[in-house]
Length: 236
Image (cartoon, rainbow, N blue to C red):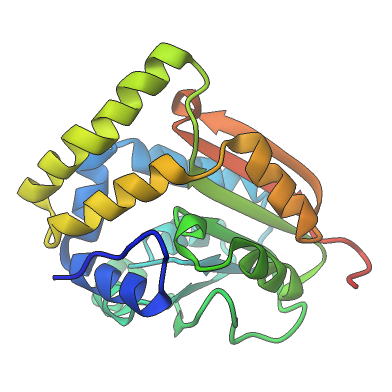
């Protein structure tokens, strides 16, 4: 089995996710105490989707997040660079109508201004270059289109933050050994969450990548944050 390093070499990250694909959805639900379902619903609501719109779900994994978006009667496309995750998703009956596309966040295989909205859930911190990925997402979004980034973040209350970080580094790997098909990968995931920038810092990165109207909303006390932004009318 493979675990990536925080250098985030793309082939290492992809191989790592290939190794967790078989039990990925179940493991996430257990580790989040079922909150993953709520976070997916909040992401869908933040996108303010309209019937018939075209939506890119980047780092979609097995497509469980894409299936949530499709509830709005939109054309939702799942894109990920882990072939193992895409294969696992295509085998699920509830995702049979979803297009699964292999693609790298740094070089998206889509034309300019292809989507009304783009979202990435728990995947931005795994790309090798956050700024480049955000610019690529802007490139494929129509002027006036929306971006929603759902990502682990920094709890706002000090005592809660301490307990959460202790859970990440101690309890999360212990639980993963009992439910995951590649428990070592969750050591990397815990480390990547801990090293990820807090909400205001990520908002600045999104703005610097050319997005406008950047804002965020904390979920579950700041364990997760939803960052929302708009594609400018005129792209440089």
